[in-house]
Image 1 (cartoon, one colour):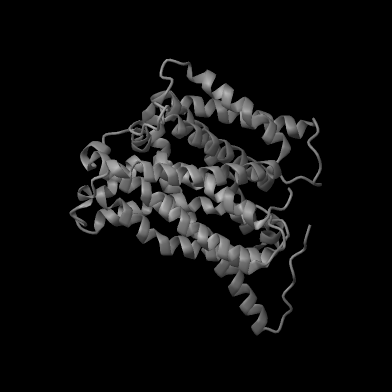
Image 2 (cartoon, helix red, strand yellow):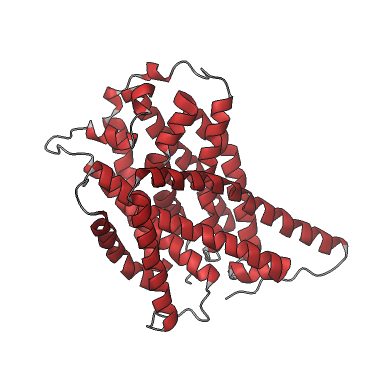
Length: 373
């Protein structure tokens, strides 16, 4: 697996997390926290910063060594293998569910009469090339798409401003603080996806630069979550917004830009490209974590690579089954929110490794440096 630059990880975060915050989780967040959903995002911000700081601290120790190898050296085979399996299966779940979420989104909003299997096969075919090429091409693609989405997303926010009535945001804390905390848990499940930063190898650069970029990205992600929440509430009102399956997409349908009558196609484009990056990146990271290659070599047709394609094909079948019924999609989102407990992993790994180093220092034992690739 090739090493990523700091900017590549920055834009990978830009293209992966907002898909859940903008489209998939938004209706559930509105139903849980109501008009105070934006407060839930703000409350989750310190937790997200703690998670990203823990990941950064761990990466300082890992350096350019493979994460799986570093875990084994730190915690022994039993603990390291258990944690690696949990993280790997979580990444596989994110990859598979991304296909299902995209298929459900397209089916409901654009092509209700098109066979679902046709949509999945079309998307699957587009992912195959990047799956074979590895994470390097995915991260470069994320940079281009990330810059474009930042520019267009800001434009959409300004274009929808005349339609907003900010009185719909009042009263604040109408039902107390409890809904806000339940909403915070939903947002926390989105921050859990930052786990992929633990796995992806990063080039040895200025570590302060990496931390500043990640820190700024968390602030940007928070803003990108709050903006659609406030947008759908102030445009539709809370009552109508909570009844919509994909509220953000309905916001785009109300925007008309000169000769562009169907501006909601922008939502389709953003959801498709974001899901493309999510599906491939999470699958490749999960695969390299669970089945690491002996050498960093070009893809050749061996039994292992055929097994990789068969595994990814099974994700398409599972996604087809889930997207056939929107109720299954909601159950998948429930499982996604339950995975929020995994957000504690970076903090636990950091504290465990820090404790081990402190004990070794007190005993006067040398602290071995991580082996690099």
